[in-house]
Amino acid sequence: MTEASPAYPTWEAASAAARACQACAADLAHGCRPVFQLHPDARVLLIGQAPGRKVHASGRPFTDASGDQLRRWLGMDEPTFYDPHQIALVPAGLCYPGTEKGADLPPRPVCAPLWHPVLLPWLTQLRLTVLIGRYAHALHPPNAASVAERVAAWRRDPTCIAIPHPSPRNRRWLRQHPWFEADVIPALQQAVRAALA
Image 1 (cartoon, helix red, strand yellow):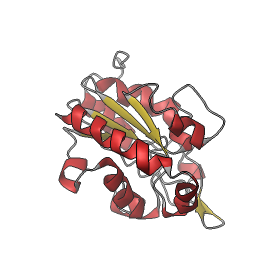
Image 2 (spheres, rainbow, N blue to C red):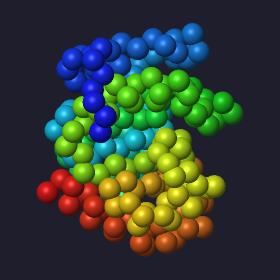
Image 3 (tube, helix red, strand yellow):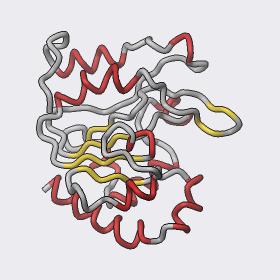
């Protein structure tokens, strides 16, 4: 981890600044409502894509069908998942980007460069990072031509595992890549258990 930004002397100050962000206010039809979970004690970092409509309404990460699937993949119950002393949840985009033609828009491209360098350095106890979906994959090299290629490289670095997005829209991808649930999920669950032990 890099050093914490001198502009924010504590993780609480960094978090408060991120939660107050209005950088994209003019471009977000539903307004700015940054949604993330952070504490320096966290051992596992989950980097998702951006909050969806339900998460925007609740103000709590992954309070939707994608969250249910993600917790199944991680082998994790809700109390553990929502314990910031164990799990950090910092998406590529902190705010709901809205939808187009029935699908969520990509995370705002200014968000991760603006806030990840401010928030992530406070996670000094991390043992495992899980990259969820292609927009999260793109934040951490090496880049791959496809989600499948990046996910298939899970053995390369056991401290940073890429997975597809757990959206119900990805059922077809899961059917086409049965090795993900057969091989990657057991390894992911083992890595999570080891990180939290």
